[in-house]
Length: 144
Image 1 (cartoon, rainbow, N blue to C red):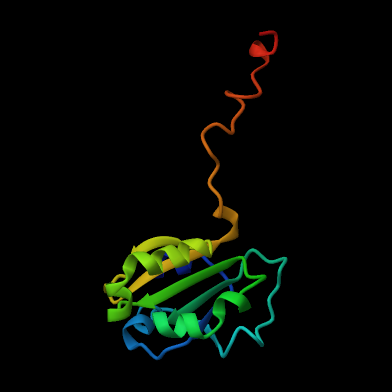
Image 2 (image 1 turned 135 degrees about the vertical axis):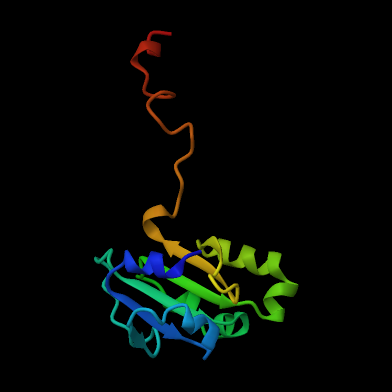
């Protein structure tokens, strides 16, 4: 995934570094973003669709930090998870964990040093094919 291209289309981007991974931080070097210390003190605006929080972490730190319980009220979150041995050895289990929290998988980062997951409430649930006016709101079929 081209992270730079995705971030250039966003405004009000904040970065939370849970690990000091130079390879993943290098993905963000082209632009200057505000760094935050934690999600506990971060003032979330639940009415804003313009905020994006980028979290740089490895798998162990992500699970132990409590980020999943502290990210309530955020509409858009990008996770950059490093490709460490823990992630590679149990990839299915960990991918299912992120899917369970509503994140979508966007592939490897540009330098293949991390995996990209994005939570965006605006595309959280895809509309099923049957949910359209052709199938259930067809006036021609009301008399049948």
